[in-house]
Length: 252
Image (tube, rainbow, N blue to C red; front, side, top):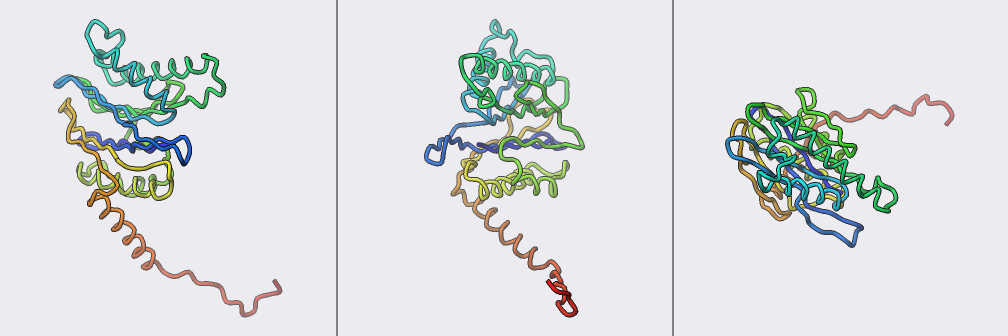
């Protein structure tokens, strides 16, 4: 499985993804799930992938092939006039790839499904964030839904719901995501480091700071340890539950 998250902040977008893929507890590999395309001064596009690895690699390869040269941009995410049109294109490619797998003599086409997060900015529009489903349709992030998760979403969601603030800094957003990923990694063996992260500043039209965090990264270890200790202190500070007295209790 996997875990990927993208946040839409007032100042831009923040992305993070794990790199673990597995086909059983004894067959674990690492693959990058964050992919970036940009034309400085014109557009910036990032794609996060979750689901069948063959499907997601085929989608990324097709998008790459259609982005190499101007003569081959038919269609290309580097030529679409808006992020909405980029999302439509990526959705169509995803649907085509899944359909081709399902009609190539394969059974249980759900096995080849994938879900994507697409974010970026195209001149003259604003930064936008989309969640793209296997069917090719998609929804867009809004003030009510300012972040998207794909993969193993349930373990890391509570901290995002409680602590996310669209006005937060990029540094705080990365810290928040690390807590979310730490909770997921501790609860599910199918998610694991290294973790890729990327920051996009609105209006820059180019990738911002980015990096990879390994499992033995000192800051990540500090976050993991400190978050666990903070939870225990918070739990201890809660008022005790009052058990009812058994005095006067009836039979049973």
